[in-house]
Length: 356
Image 1 (spheres, one colour):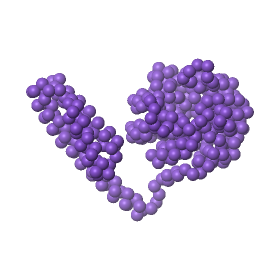
Image 2 (image 1 turned 60 degrees about the horizontal axis):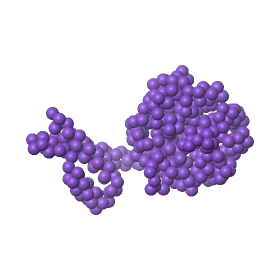
Image 3 (image 1 turned 90 degrees about the vertical axis):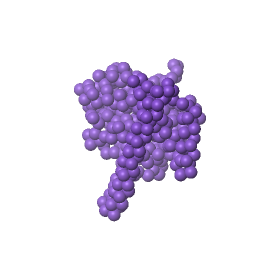
Image 4 (image 1 turned 45 degrees about the vertical axis):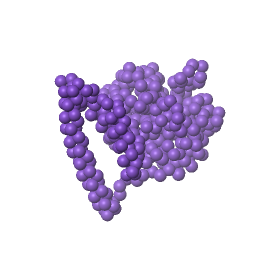
């Protein structure tokens, strides 16, 4: 399984570079400008060589020619270089040109056959691979893509949180659904998770706030699209920033430090965590008692041939719980998520009882 100690850099890491490699001059000059920023955490230069686009007749990347430009960046600046791959042919060509890091895009992650093809092509190597979340908020598909890579022996695998496609109505280009990244971290605690604030934000003036949010929830790095002339970029121009802006942005971020040697602080933190542990145990005990009551309700409904789900009861319950939560200063969304899960489990239990 992935392990942060096996990586050739310290966390959190910063990755920067243009959305697409457009010309040798654009790639080289951008890389030199990024290197000149002299930011210790910034170790990796990124550029898309093959660009999966929604519609044809748009710029779909420079192709293999761009790999030689990335090789030149590596030799001239000392930066590690990264690019996206979508099939086994891309993998073969990237390895041939000495690309240091590969990433799998959201569209590719959404297709298990495509991920398996890439995994098979990488078998026997140990190149670092970053896996973007799938297009839709599907945690199982994201984890499955990561597992396909680790199952062929890759140990340097990380995730990239780039947000999820939505139907409109939010500030960002892609919905962050931060809970999904937190859930992934909970299920795979040794897996590094990097945030792609450029794709989440969609607009350069929103990138900084997304970066800070990612760091605040303890994600392990940032991949920020950086271009010498963003307004004239051939792809995703609105979400790219200049190297100068990148430096200002990073200098204004608050990187959380590891727990230090303050014994008094550590003792206080331990006491608060002990209280949390006790409350969590009480919550689990309460849920267990609730489940026993739900099972009795299911048995009664079975005797009377009543359906497991009563929508009016559910809506009434949800309104009461949310109203109480508001009075106690709790988030409506937070409580709604909890009780949606509790109610779904109640319906499942009652349905199982009725089948017997």
